[in-house]
Length: 471
Image 1 (cartoon, rainbow, N blue to C red):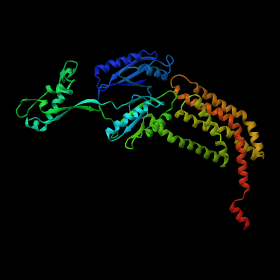
Image 2: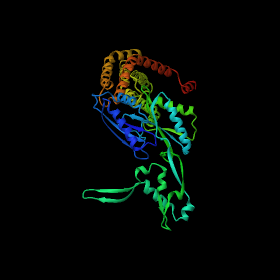
Image 3: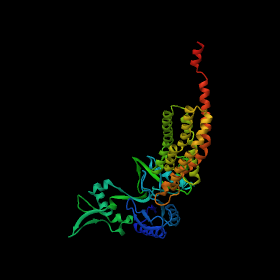
């Protein structure tokens, strides 16, 4: 597991280190945690810390979602620290590093308007019941000190702007001034103010700049005036446009689709202007892209099956009879996922696509046998489909049960990677059970219905035939 901790932007490194140590002690107290590593990002400020949590081997601890829930509750009461945790994914899907698993990004060329709506949307998202752990990467404004250089005075005293800049960097930067060599190593000498002299604006009054004309030291306070204010710690960009990313996790029982719908509705209700562009990134963006392509993917699979069956039976009607068994399989898969309280994930969709190939074999066994009986034994459609159902019933049950029993270990699986396999197995099991119950009765009915339609169409002469006959 991994996480991010945010504190006030004006916190010192020492205070942030103390808070991160307290966070690590709380995490280590959980019985499922093996060890913890944490560090503080030095740039752009010391107010953001990272934590990496290694869990004990699976089988000796609770599942990762339960551990995450316990740690979220335990770290919720930390004073002055906002903690976001997530289960680390082996495969990261796009996006940038964030405190929570899913990302929602706002973009606007106007940074003032972006700050306003980023704060407003963060507040709105925190009130949505579908999501939790809402954290914005827009850190609160930090106090700033601006030096307004009196250029005329500086020029008169023989001081350039470049000299002032170099003096400030010598004091508050990290300029390497020398290198000390030993027999086995080397050490860089960095010049800067002592920390106790760099914590207030009074430090600037003790800095001097050497005049290039007189050689005298000129106090920096004479060369300009100081103005205090507030500025953002950093301005993030996505592409070339300023952006703010709001990360979030899902609440137990909520799906990513519900969260995306709720956030889009929150955009509309908040009245966000068109100049502020809200988009999902990372896993949430991949989810949106998959929703757009899934209907076309399923349609392409069905069309491919129809074409192959049409060529096999040299008919445009019988493939429709076989394809009519697919809706019951999809319905069974969706009901099984719903009863198991699982989302329709990518693995669930793969299970439904697999059902297209597994379920249609029931109808193929009956339709193929019935067509042979009609053509070879000269049986009527009713007698042919009845004989096919009676003779092929055991074979249909054997193939269905073999596929069903093969999918049960996936549905009931435990151990590493079971979260990925369980939705696949449940979708296959649910689709097979429901389709087996329904298609044994519906396929003969649909076969006879299409046969009657085909017969009535063959008995009705076309307009061309009618015209030729009258001629």
